Length: 393
Ligand code: T4K
Image (cartoon, helix red, strand yellow):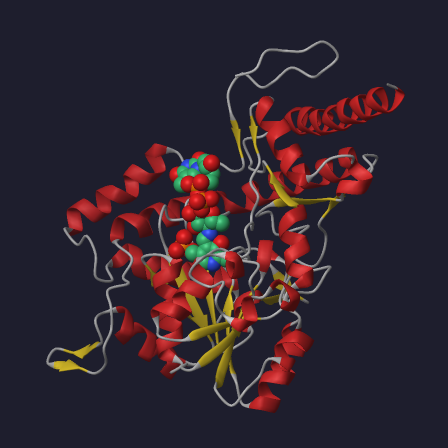
């Protein structure tokens, strides 16, 4: 860890990570685990699983919900349940799991550029990429900001396409009061430890249609439909009783965690507003979703690049993250695709070089946010001072 330098804020004594999981009291978890122990049912849709599924259905405001062992297995199952094939239109500005779920299903991801404000896939770019091989759209509510769900629905209807939403970041997002999981044909939620609501590892699929849920549930359980019937080529995507018990305990604290994160987000916005070249991402979902605190660094106005700021913060023991750099289209496994060319993705290419996720979790204090904001201002002042000194030489 670096030592304090004259004129600069003191580094944090312990590393400040981009997030910390919401941890319920061990006692509240143990009480639920006692039930699991006495039932002797550790997995395969036991009482904790059924309770969590029902509680989340209400919490998310969706008609049907199926829990999964993780978000990626859920996404792969959604793709299979909707019989997607050929090409699927998607965003390059996401975590690798999004395009990988398509590739694992033998589908070619076709990358489309994003909207410069929401950073979600741009319906106009999606429409331009439709071909005779296109079977669907896999859109991401990135950082919890809702996609243009109406624009995407209209174009999907025009071309007879299915829509899967990757709502990994969007647990708390609502659109005009409606749960984010009510849009599209299927929505996937991730309950990884880094998410606002989590089950350590876990995920879910939401849909509106009972027969689709029945298909999803069969696929999640090896394709087993009945005692002697295997109806489809499924996988094992079930959530265990231990994970479900943790989820029930975490769910009790989510509202308070979200309220804290919203206060911290407001605090960041206020403290960062005077810093030239730093803009907090805002939009439906991202200001109130509480998943990430995302800033964009305009290199010319701020005085140094996002990468230099990222490194500068590390020297203060602050570990911000460059979600989502590099773009998925830049990975070795995707760069050969025609849609991966930088010329096809100018908005996404620029965004991936400018975004930075600052620490955000309920355990941070407003004074931590003050300090991180002061550090950003100090990094800018130091760079401007160096530039002025070298200009004077
Ligand atoms: N789609 C999208 C759009 C996604 O963002 C993701 C996952 C998925 C699909 C797939 O869903 P899952 O299959 O994961 O359910 C993390 C998460 O592993 C990943 O779930 C998440 N997105 C992604 C955005 O972030 P990393 O590689 O950044 O994780 P890691 O281990 O570096 O953790 C970040 C920080 O969080 C650490 O610096 C410290 C803190 N942390 C992390 C863990 C795991 C803790 O304090 N405790 C913990 O237990 O990917």
